[in-house]
Image (cartoon, rainbow, N blue to C red; front, side, top):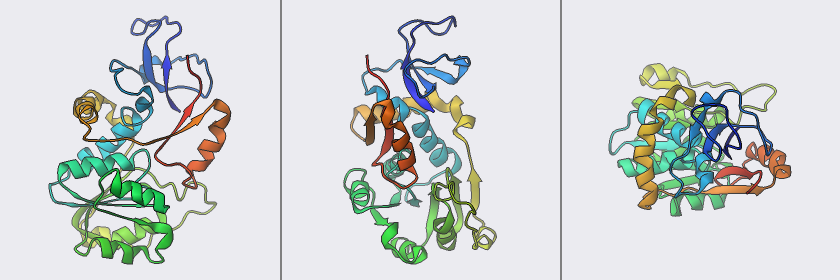
Length: 265
């Protein structure tokens, strides 16, 4: 997975002993990196290093690419984000608010819903576990429809969103966490709305947008330092806590970005 590390030794000209890096690492205290091209050197150290697993790393760039590059937002548009308190969703919501959009998120507990509204500044949010009809919940929050949907969960929520999209709405498909562990994935029944409402639905991988990382840092670092954006992490201390932290993601046990602190200096 993605992690933050310090270089212990290097035979690569771009990295030297003592450098801080983020990128693909292993779940271990010491790793041999054979493809250093997948690493990014950390030059800004006046922020928590753990941020490079989140807002300044892969989740941050994912939020940036999905929202700005794929959804092409316009000021005043209505934005819905599922799994909105997670590593990516919390950022999409804050980016959208700063851009001038109306933002609603869904999450799986009252604590998470309160977090969305009170800490991240969402205009509204709901606990999907307390909503017997997702489509009615979305109609309540978006009586005129949804312009942008940032998709993180799939399944019944995607089905409901398709009923509530506006004409020429955009959907960025980042993930479908509700479906990953099902023996038989749920079908989606409202696909006809993509045609009738001329909705653009696009899946994406952050790997395709790594070239935008410097541009992203130029935007987000001042936001962090000026307090315009916040980031919540859920830290599990010790490698032995890693498996439980990973499994917990699929049932929403984490609050914010799940981080495993493997070792410290």
